[in-house]
Image (cartoon, rainbow, N blue to C red):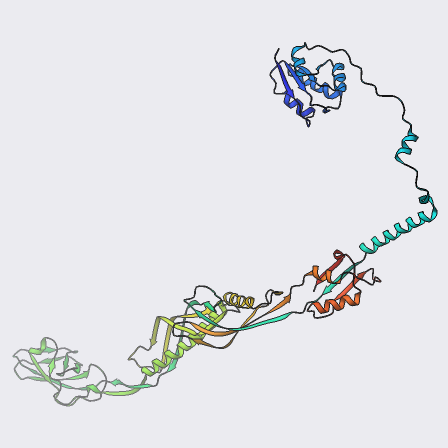
Length: 497
């Protein structure tokens, strides 16, 4: 009959053995115990294995030299063998019941065993003086341990800050891409559109036509027909520019050559230009020019002019300059509101880049006592971000910082000294003053090591000598009457104010 042999390991237990048995396909399963190792605790473990083998439809057998395992197997009617070959050659039947080995029932001599393991003390150790000495040493050892571990100290230190200052030249330019230690900073360009209007009194004067000239025109018939001369017929002078008059009423010129009629006329435009000499009006506009001749037998009169204010070039230029100055100030105020408080603005770089709209009232050539100008323009201006300025200042300060000191956060102050110098290339150079607060790097382990075990006064003196402090160190001892600092470093706590 096919037999499945399973070699057990030293770490196997009932659960792992059952897992190994679950994979068998044979009718017999033979468990081989490792040499000199006891895996199972007794009959109950074997009973569980036997039941599991039965549920699998297999017969369980053991290979072991343990008398206790063999005895338990016999009780449960499990075949047991000394070797694998014996299990394969002999039939599986219940072996004769082996009796559980009985150990020697003779009771040991407990007194002799006690004397063997606990020999009597040396005579001098049993003396009262020796016992008192050992007791005293134990008490002293206990007190020493208490004195070593119980005392503690808290040292409060207030390091003295140091101000680090530096002055250096800075060149800012739109051509610089990033901050560098050579003192170059990138410049930001901002564009703003503003609009506004302003008025001023005009200072120019000019003559303005006031009343038109009047007169009488004499029309002469050049034909034999009757000719109607309607009101509004235009007659004028020769030459450029022609002075024009219009008839004030209708007229009928009788037929026949050289028949005449006089009709009142009025200058087409007011002003002194309408005051003409006799005979100056000799032309007729329209179809009547070939049928009728015209002239003014007497001078025309009544054309007048008067003096009025009118904007001149100086007024326009002055008003434009004033409005642009107001808009520049408006741009600076608006941009200052948009900037962070520590950003650096360059007012000298404010440039008018584009005129979007420009309107004068009254228009050029028209009179008026008040001139109004409306402008909508675009300005550009340069500035430096505070972050870039602080980055450059921090890098320059770090380059000159003492190794045992560290900067305090948010204490860097950057101020511009002197005037800004605007360069033809578009850049700006100026000098800045950078400062910040530094605190010393205090190694608390070194401080504790320097004062451990010292008297209070000497510890204070040593701390003041080795550290830059604004005030004397504050040392608190526990217990308060203890005169020395602890000998153990970890019993000293350092706090930095």
